[in-house]
Image (tube, rainbow, N blue to C red; front, side, top):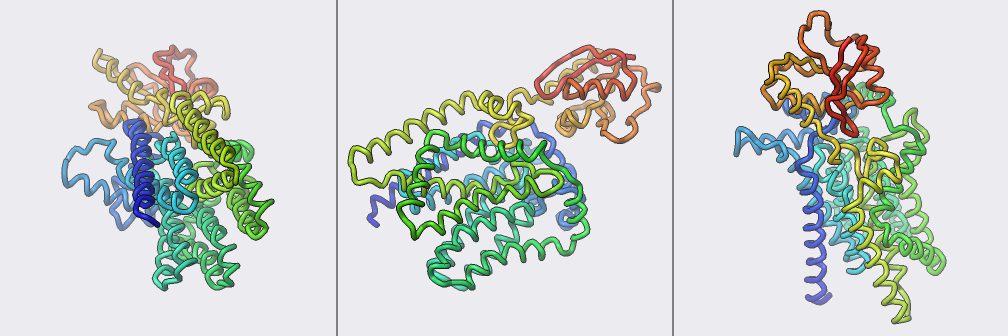
Length: 486
């Protein structure tokens, strides 16, 4: 490889890094939403580091991420006693930036500068990249672990150094310790390398790649197995299997919308024209189908976002397919097959940057039915601080407000925003379902407000407390504030 090619490849990786940082900046200052607040309050702020592992009553605890976030926030505290909250997102930003950089380098090396670079750019510039890079959750960390496992798998395939095997197991251990659903991505890595190892008759290495994730899962959760199985029985999940499947696959397709027809054409060409790669092509198809059992087998379909750590594999496979589409002897056809995907992808990326919410609504119905492309909490209409600011105005005007926030209105986001003000702690109260009303209104002489998701959620809250009227004070697409009376 000449020095010029090496330099160009590095520039492509750095440009992908710049794009992903710009995507992250667009979402860096958004309000904390339900899962982020639960993560910080329950698993990061209050428990000591040594206790986080054992706090697995609900699967919201991405254990490895929670531990690292605890360390990260402690590190930030060394420089300031009042750390700006947006800096809490720094751990995910660092994980995402590292992952995109190393993935872009791998894709350019494996798929070529054009196909690999274009695919990496499309992801780095996407809203999904920005949303997950700024989420105080373990999904981007899981994405990084998949990228690292791809690199270690390549070491095992090409130069079977002994150190690669224990390191591969360690990354598997950390990945499933972040969230058990990462087992799908780890299985995908094994499937990715299995055909090449099979051709080399490296059956022991194949066995290791498949066994390591399962063994890591057993080892990590064995000491807390009772809590692990209790979490499995909770039955939390997405609206329906069909909705989950649609959101996952269409969200990924949307990332590569401009080049997708060419990727599909390339995959067909690989199957038809290179018989020796059919086993690898079949393995690639299986990698895309890995999430399906979690949608249709379990009592409740998995959240689409838990399969975000599979995206590095899917992007790499798309890069291979795009590269195959451009392999032609005709100079004219080669120019066309280079220009068209580039122009179409640039147009699609630009359109999504300006109309991402509209595209999400068109495909999935609303932000609440989108877990990947433009979730409700990443939109401008999600504004819990606005509700809290309005209540502050009422309190300054002499009112004694009491505010009930329903579960469906993303109560943690509102309570967290209120905790950053000087309002009394009991001003905002979460009214959780399947429990008695949280306060006796007969002893409250001030005004009463409801924060709900509107529609049926507002009607349920009114029936629950016996209110006869609710006057809108502020209405947003995902939360609303009403003055309630009997």
